[in-house]
Length: 104
Image 1 (cartoon, rainbow, N blue to C red):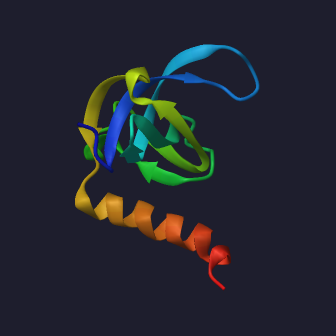
Image 2 (cartoon, rainbow, N blue to C red):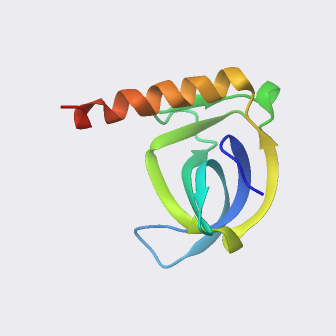
Image 3 (spheres, rainbow, N blue to C red):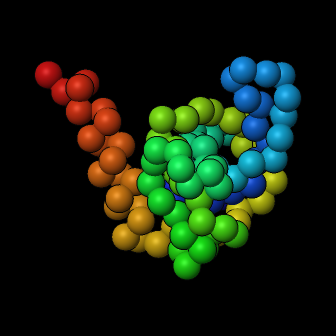
């Protein structure tokens, strides 16, 4: 069972191509077999939330909250690790900040 904060290895189709690659992603939530995830990149010059080897990453990486998409649960190859509680809070706070424009 997937849960928020799990970092998974998943088959991901990129928006600008039909190519499917295995990539790490952060589970935001799972519902009815669909998994909302945020992409993770090892390109540390990109914008996002830093994710270190100390926190479980294979190499220093960036959680890209500007790259959120939905995949089928069947596309998840395996769970790599779960974010520490403190990092989950950072992700939550950043998401809430980005969604603040919806508040009226």
